[in-house]
Amino acid sequence: MHRFQRALCIAILASPVVDAYASDTRPAGEQLVTMQVNGEIEIDPQGRVTAHSIETDVLPAIREVIARAVAGWSFHPPTKDGVPAIARGRMQITLSGRGRGKDYAIRVDNVRFPDARSSQSRWQVDWPNTGWYREPLGAAMLTADIRIAPDGRVLDFFTTQCVVFARKPGTSDAKVCRALESFVARRSGGIKMVHRPGSGEAPSSEPITGTLPIHFQVEKATFDHVPGRWRVEWRTPYRRAPWLEKDAPRIGASDVVATDGLLADSSNLRLLTVVSSESKSSSP
Image (cartoon, rainbow, N blue to C red; front, side, top):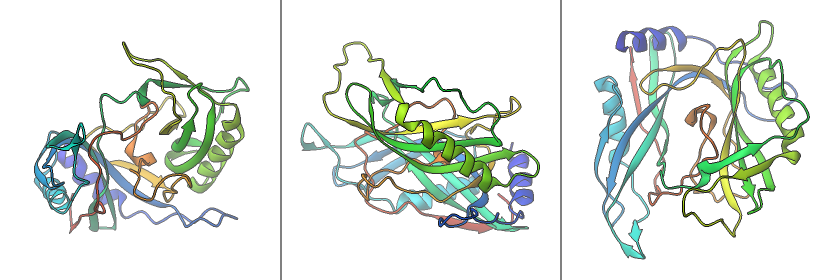
């Protein structure tokens, strides 16, 4: 696996940046590689990191990049029943690699703190019965931030990011994203979410906000994230939904897998600092 990581990063990071969306005001997308790494973290009542561990099998150099990033993190002081308390939780880190030839940089791109108790994953999408996208131009993942009424009506829908893993010959990555985003936007008004509550779970009386991954696949190929492996992708910039607070956790298309349902970081762990750490080298 480690030899594969080295070869992939050296070969892929030499690829050029793809042109921007034609007739679109957004910045250009870019080609890069990403990797998901899973672990755990512990925070003291003052919001300082006291311990962390990585369970994914990765190279020591990657562990060093993560360790430097974690050392600089600070959190909103965690509480339990309104009282400052030690907090422990899962963390899902997304690494990104950019560069040309043998000169590249790996950095911590984002981090999520999934809460296994969250009820968001029990919401399922009921798409309008108007026909699905039968022949997408490429394999891709979209993420959309949505607000849901207690009865399942979608109150707001905003596409945040697009990632392309493969495309048909003669089609640009930007065109794939533009076509898929347009397709989803046309059908977003007819979406309804169906809640399947867990045992003893009371229905929500307030609107719920979450991130919805939407996966498009071609030729029965899968390009899902496997922890510890680099994935090649072309990605548009992340755009935050206008109703979200500026410090709200970010969940982009590089941070999700096809099997994810509605996602929301509802854990007791909330970062105060910017997620960032970078390492430059000649092999991953």
